[in-house]
Image (tube, rainbow, N blue to C red; front, side):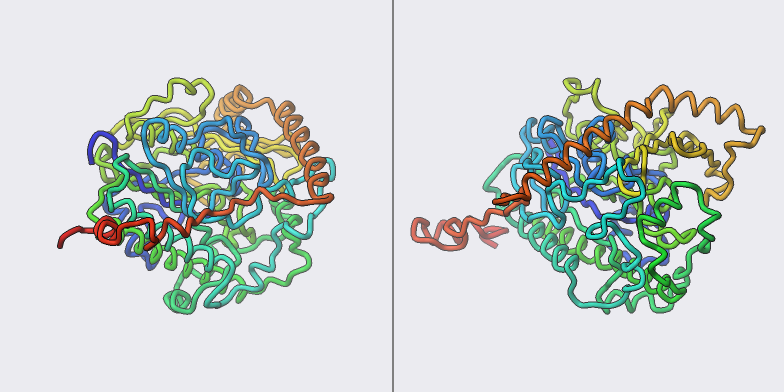
Length: 503
């Protein structure tokens, strides 16, 4: 692969990491991901930096928590001055390209990518801004509701299927173009899908794969509203649960569609991988999700929670410098940027004091990790920021409005027993509380979020008054430079656009 390896990143949306304990679970129909797992370093306990799309993705790209990026929610601007892995790689001589979703908010819709092949599936403006000044208010036109569950089923085309079909097509075409050799720089191609994110609707071809699946019921049944913790109650209220009658069949159909869309994704990833292999290109391959999905466990759906289904994600890296096998040490999506830099031989010293992640390469070479994994959440269904530490077997959650939570994931993987009030674990609680307080000043964090929200509400309302100039990315397709045009030599064109040549 030469001094600087090519890099192919597959990102998916809302894929529950508990379904990837060591690559895809045995019962998932995912042959392409299973093949990738068989040659990857597999991180069984990888976590998002924040269980929501835009903050999780900004953190993944920058190696920084939302408290640093200020991308607190799905309508917070990602500053152009924050370097991403695309900036670091491009600065080092890479060509960087994105096909698909990254949920950038603000006028910068590139963030280091030299080329972007599709628009985004979600809006780029401030319209989805939560408002801590109005706790409990539901913003009807964009908040999640349980209609995604009650409307689960089969369709051959949807908004999201149309999008991901396009993402895979453009990524495949880009790999063919890269193989033609017109640009001799190493490349990093990010292919980012929106599935298996709800709504839970799948094509019949994939739906039928799970007709007799034995995993259509959640392991932990729905609980009464009164039995949930304070934040989970806020999630239920934000999801408008009282106005929907979710039946057992709705739950089963939603989970069936979700599993079906994992298989759909597997096919799309297979198409891209086939193009890579057919053009004899080599690349480091990374597979990751931005956050998970509760999938009806405890009665919760979607994300927005630190529970495992929402916060844990799959992460696999196939790289020559990292050994094949399963790593159990907790890691984070904010570790991806320093990992890519290490694999590409790039120094991050210029920004090291302001990053939160650490390279995973040493773990893939038999090393150990002792630092805790950090998570933050400050978007819809929160009235004040929540923070979490995953440290060894423990998970510790803190919010100024709520009682502390302490879970022993080794002995209580479903997080059913909060040990924060158990005298037998007082020492662990005290130690983790101290680590959390050393990392986060919650009052300051809350004030910064409120400032950001208030500013954005003013700007959004102003910009929607009168002429509207959206920030949505408009893909450029220069028709005069495609196929055959009269400023080109036909013989040269046919030869240069063929791969392999002369066979």
